[in-house]
Every structure is written in C-alpha cells, then in structure tokens.
Image (tube, rainbow, N blue to C red):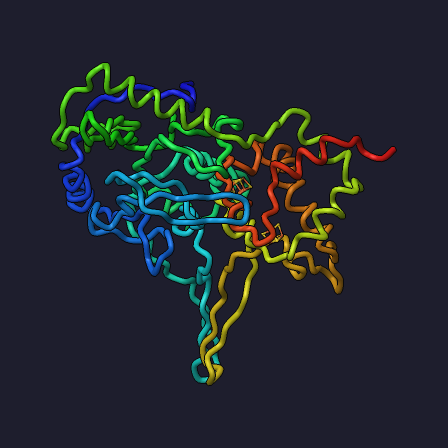
Length: 379
Ligand code: SF4
Ligand code: SF4
C-alpha cells in the first residue's frame, strides 16, 4: 500500500486551462458535479456548473474555535482546506424521508419514501475525507444491516480526489496515516501546481472508470521535475502539521480512565451543542421523527442526524443513560477513539480537525487525549 505522505505516481498533466473539460466530460457521462463553493460567505459543498464555481483564489484559516476565509496571492483552485460540510451531506443526508402514510376513507396506506439518488461526481475529496468515506462504508455497507440509501449513493458516485499541498493548523491527518495524499478510494486524483512553472494538475487514475475518463481529457506527459515539485509540496503539508493524535494504547487507555478528572474539566467547558459530531465526517448517529400535515391526513417518518451530546439521544425506558454533559462528552470521545476499534476495527477519526474548528468552546480532542494520557487513572 502506498504512503499518504507520498504521491503514488501521476500519469498525466492536465493544464489548468483544460479544467473545464473535466467538468464537461463528467456532465456528458451523466454525472452532476458537486464540490466546494462559497455561498453567502460560507465554504459549503454544492452543485457546480464548472470550475468557475470553485473558491478559486481563496484560502482557509482554521484553528480550534476559529475559521476564516481569506484571499490568497495566487489563483489556485484548491488553495483552501476544509469547510464545515463533509461528503456525508450527500451520502448520509441530515434529513431523509423513510416512509409515508396516508389516510383515505378511513383506511391507512404506507409507502416507503422514494428517494432520488443523483449520480454525483464529488470534486475535491481530500485524503482525510476519503478515509472518512472508507470508515462509513465499513459501518453502513457491511454487517447485518446495510443502509440502502447510502449504498445507492455510493454506487452512483464518482470521486475526484485532490491532494493537499498545504495544511490548516487544525489538520492532523499525517499522524493518523490518512493524508495529505490520497492513496485509494478515488477514480481520479489531482495535485495542483500553481506558480512560476505554470498552472496545471498532475492527474492520477485510481480506477478503470478514472482511466477511461482520463483518456478523453487533453493531457501532456508528466516531467520528472513536475512530479518532484508536487511531491515536495505534499511532504511539506504533512511536516507543517503541528497537531497529532497518538493512537498507542487505545482503546484500553480510555476504558481505564472512565472516572478520570479530565472529564470534569472538559465538561466545564463543553456546551453540549453537538457541533463536533455534526461536522464530523464519520459520525452516523440518527433519530427518527414523525411529521403530520395540518389536516391529519398524511404523515411521514424522517431519519434525522442526531448526536450523543443531545440529552435525549440516550433516553430509554423512562430515563437517560447519560444525564450529564460529562457523560456525553466521554461517550463521544471514548466511542470515537476506543469502542470503534472494537466495533468496526478502525478509529472514528481521520484527523480532519473539523470538530475542534467548529467547537464554540475550542475543545480540541487531540489536547483532551493528551491530558488523559498525562495523568494515570485513579487506582
Ligand atoms: S473526530 Fe474530529 S478530527 Fe476526527 S474525523 Fe471527526 S471531526 Fe475530524
Ligand atoms: S465539545 Fe464543543 S462542539 Fe462538541 S458538544 Fe461540546 S461545546 Fe459543542
């Protein structure tokens, strides 16, 4: 398996001026391109008509509790990192109708919701986000219950990854081996170079479908110097990451510290808002809710994102399993970095940094784990 710190070999150069051709080709093949764009001052994921919709010439500044969009000096298409939205917005939507019921002459009929699954082309999936999709695949596509909507979306989707040549202060993918370079799980992967040597993409095909698409694009051969330049930038993006998450000793380390005083410390700061889980690309908890029309003739059941920071998420048989914010934060972190390993054979974290960026209290899970490591559990 190739290293996420190294580009595994680009096969072609796509000039930036020909970037439109990739979008046109995807549309011709029946895909709806979606990717990062700026709407009302926010970096979001949405439908794109072409590369002009991308946040070209913008960069992100992301730290614990802080996010800013800033102009950059160059006209790079991919000179920013992550916004608050991840691709689970499309694969595992926040609101999904499940079943509808209708009353007619006193009889009630039920019908499963017919959810349209567009053939999306995800443009600009970062390495940590590919890792998140891989994790959600393990949870939602394997085991005794398969999520049919997720399965249909995954099957229909095409993935164009973008390797990171810069990292935000919140990123720690290098310490988890999930980035900054994409190694698998994509159809095409791009590495953008924008400087004195010109503006172009190194393109790598990761599937037969990707190879076929690449063959239809205007391309030039890769020069050794260009590949080396891209490699140097990706390696620098990894080296620049100041945060890290050490995984040695997990999950036992967390299981041994369920009564550690650090949980009281974090509970005094945590607002139980749930932002951390909502922005996390691997979290998959949900609840069910029913809606009826005002005439009480039709009703629908919805699957809605839920988070373990919500008090009612642990309500069962007349009581709450986790009545305190301390218990709920402990559940979130212990599940992500502990119990997931037992349940799914992987961590529930890819080092994207979103949870600490979008936490209003700037709570940083890497710092919380370090604090838990620092003091041994009470005997
Ligand atoms: S736990 Fe935080 S850093 Fe890890 S994948 Fe989720 S949002 Fe990203
Ligand atoms: S850790 Fe931060 S984002 Fe998560 S629930 Fe607490 S206050 Fe909200």
